[in-house]
Length: 176
Ligand code: IMP
Ligand code: MG
Image (spheres, rainbow, N blue to C red):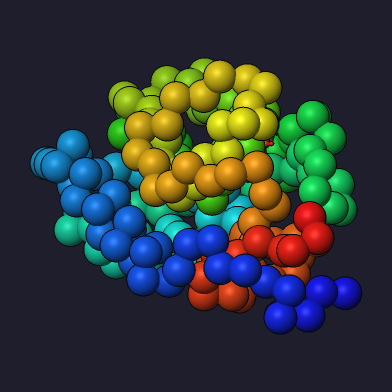
């Protein structure tokens, strides 16, 4: 079991806050006069989404989907399922998906394809972090916070086996 001393800060809370402000202004600029539907992917995106919407001066609506692709641990199983679906219709809406990290890209590609079939007016992706070194499926990220190295990161909503989501900075573990 890792002790807090083994964590190294990769992205500090101050850097995160600056990125959230920047992303909010980019999104505001692009969605003027619109009422976008923000779809957060549970659970990892909930901290980011909560901070982002409070910086956005837009009448957004919020939805969540829960997908499963990971077993316990750090590797994706490669098979994605919708565990908890949408309650708000997506047809004709300006949909912006909010994700914590794009790693292999398998999870987000699955969700974007799933949503595209529901005929939204527009469909874009905002990701806090991107780990392009691990990509298996190409993904285009419309709004990106940070590109991160090939390390397993935790904190600010991101977990390792459901732990460490509460850390205010994005950290990596010495031994992973
Ligand atoms: P992908 O399908 O491989 O792109 O996996 C995306 C999902 O895996 C993210 O939504 C995260 O929940 C999880 N994930 C991938 N890399 C990390 C990491 O470094 N830390 C924590 N979770 C991760
Ligand atoms: Mg996760």
